[in-house]
Image (tube, rainbow, N blue to C red):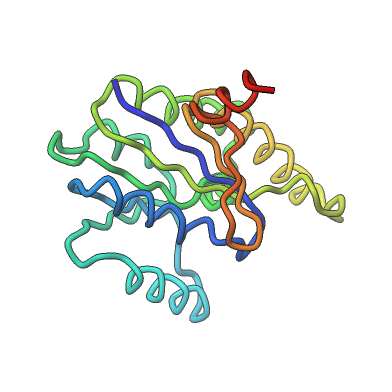
Length: 183
């Protein structure tokens, strides 16, 4: 049975960096599953910097719309997978006209596929519920679907971390449960 770790936080909070740190500690064969799509020069630069921050020995798979298919067909020798990031996936699907029901089905599939495999899946996502109400219907749809998707991932995950100013705060997992019992 696989393991699901969920890392959530605001923009530039250190989510991706922490996901990489966790994967390095595991010390196993790792694949980085990137959902960002380079649609402009600025995004191309961001993706390039992300790639340069990862160990050269890691595989990178870029799949912005169907990472579930990648996970289902992943070689058995990979022991750690970083999916970065869930909110890019949601944005990509929404912009393609995919509805909420199908997006949430995809998110549940991503969470469930880990339980059937033998790798650690580290999922990175943005916290979207602490900002202002978006001005457009598309923005509100994105926020709502991302919020529901984050809840699905957190529910399935064995460990959940909230990143704040580069500091990981463990919200769910073995040590958190022990701390609660001791109080």
